[in-house]
Image (cartoon, rainbow, N blue to C red; front, side, top):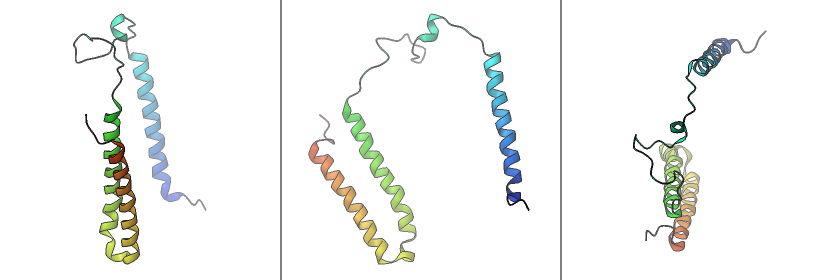
Length: 120
């Protein structure tokens, strides 16, 4: 007996979607106009003529702020399910969460002392 009978509809759906996506990409490649002019290779700046180079260097502090934000945003994502199931797991999960928060606080203090959070 075939063990994946309950997935038949899924596989049919997957085949249909794959066929249509390949068809749509092929049609767009076939129908799209091919214009290779100088305007095609300029960077787009809301319809305004570009000034200077398109590739500029950003200062590292933007990335540091973004990195610290992402770290603490992910912390929230990990702590929310823990908070929802706190009563089910008992004191051991509380200690694990405290260790997790302590590691993140140590990382925050390290970034603070290194000057990663200074905006000068």
